[in-house]
Amino acid sequence: MSTETPPVYYDIVIIGSGIACTSSLRQLLDRLQKNEKPAAPLRISVIEKDREFWTGLPYGCRSSVNSLTITTLGEFIHPEDKKDFISWLESGQIGWMEHIRRNGGAPAAAWIYNNAGIIAAHQWDELYIPRFLYGNYLKEKISTAIETTGRLGIATVQLITAEVIDLIPESGSPSKGASLSNASYKVILEHKDGSTGTLGAGKVLLTIGSPPVKYIPAPAPGTDPGKERRQPDYLSVNDTYAPGLEENLKAIGTALSAITDREKRNILVMGSNASSLELLYMINYRTELRDLINQICVISYSGLLPHRITPNEHPDYHFRHLLALKEKRIFTADELITTIEQDVAIAYGKGVHIGDTYYQLSDLVVELQGLLDWDQQKRFSNIHGMRFTKLIRRAGAEYRDAAEELSSRGKLEMVRGKFLELVAAGDHAVQARYTSLPEGKTLLYPLPFAGVLNCGGFEDLPQSSSRIISNLIARKICKVNSTDRGFEVNENLEAAPNLFINGPLLGGIFNKQLRLWHVENAKRIHTLALLLAEFLSNQ
Image (cartoon, rainbow, N blue to C red; front, top):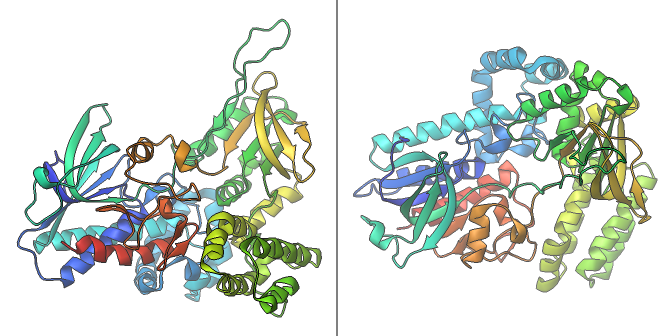
């Protein structure tokens, strides 16, 4: 494994080094060891623009040592990997527990206290693990695989720190002993110093993760009479994980500490997804930060955080209208999503929460999807799939209970609405204009905000600020699928000849083999990596 100047040509170039890369490369190297030894080692390059290889954002240094999996380990990890990972956890338990104690502060102390009994009983399936542990496990596994295949003369892997900004199709095709003259793609790199470089690739695997987050425009300069027009001075965090979650938590504390009037120490969080919930968890267990805050306002379309995962308290609950739809047998995708929302609303009215009935509802919806014809199945997947996912989002008790504690202290308000714009509101402050839902009224939230944190989701691909994504679209190498969240691919996960994809950019895949409206969890990415290993290893 080397990070020196690359040669001209690679058999496989992997763009991005997060979990989709790591899972795919591990499976590929494992498969190569089982195949007949090649005449010459397969040359592989992994190109990463950020400072850390193999973990990506969720499992690496940009998250916190206190960041947890959103579901239990039993749900989170692929069955093929679970035994090895649990063995890794148990063999290194003394070391990683001490690391958490030393570096995690109050959130870590609470996590250790809450989970001591589960850990002692080795009930790993029930645990919401600190995500960095899985990242460390991946790094060890991939390093071992690279060393082994290199020593056996099967494959060499070179790491390159740079950003891939463009791919240019070439006329050649990959073959053993190939050179730049018969590469499938010319890969254009930009290094940290702004210089560019070029290399050839027989095959390309795109694993760059999710597109950039949607940017929140700054408000127009203030227009108070007698004051100079200028941008309001407030904390704006458009990506809570850039440069890192811990850095941004410190920035919140610094910004609020500079404000003497407690009533103005308010934070606006855009979006109510898992990242938003993680942020609330981090704030709640940092007493000094929590006490600084007057109020946190979360604005989102649903006005709801992910549902708390609890033992099933309603095993016999019946979704009456969905069951009637099943008896009807002929219905449309639009009828299905409307009926789902109707039955969920009824369940809420009876005090039944989706966290309690998740599996009954999910299994029933899968069964009903199967009754739709092909076109209607595709419509449900591509048009309504994410709508359904947002309706049934879940999170572990620790995350969800932290939000409830903030709410009980009067520090958290959930607002259901569509954000419109930020408005200048004097020194160190902005206000938020939004459309209330379902009423449709345009409102200005009454409190000023000293900080705005964006957890509102990712850009659609046609409007992406990512240079590699926009260039792939502009060159018509890749076609955006009907969800606007992913690229169209064939059953070999190819978006173009010898250009493969794994990870979130497969969102909206729909073919005879795979029907997935989002591809963001570790288990699903691992499953896709098993398929990719076959396609990438074929010469």
